[in-house]
Image (tube, rainbow, N blue to C red):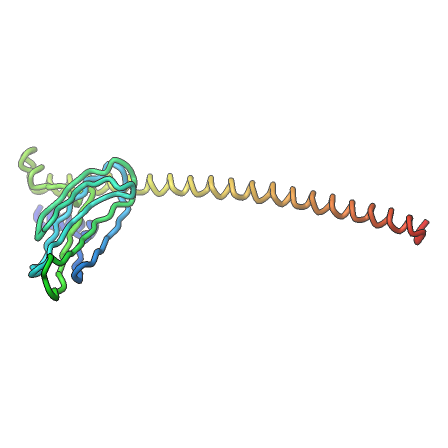
Length: 207
């Protein structure tokens, strides 16, 4: 039983991907990180910003339409969470500003950890609420992970069908344009032959 439980935990750790990174931000600079996320997905994030004398740091989470999901001024550390309403490009922006009268300034070290989908779920709370045993909890994780993979494949299939329809539509338009161009060329060639024939006859070069 212990071996099976360990195997399930190992599978979950191998299949679940965490998005965490660290970078430096100079004074009066802005940096945004973007990610495409499907509809109806829970997104959580945790950030930690190092101290910077004479500076303030702002955090802003928006989508491509400008909807604000989270904002914090003079931030140092914190968390945010939201659920996507549609498939879109979401971005997390960090901005540092020098305070009035401040001189110089140091780079701020920013750590950001983002999770979405099953990664963002708190399985400890789920286990307490549903009174699940450790093995049952791992099975639920695998079930959610399988559902997430199925949804990803369904989305990829839908995108493939959309691209195929676009390709077929483009192919049809190119075919119609080619036929139209050929008809125009044939018409132009016929007109040139008739015009030259009439011209040569007027000059009595041909009978």
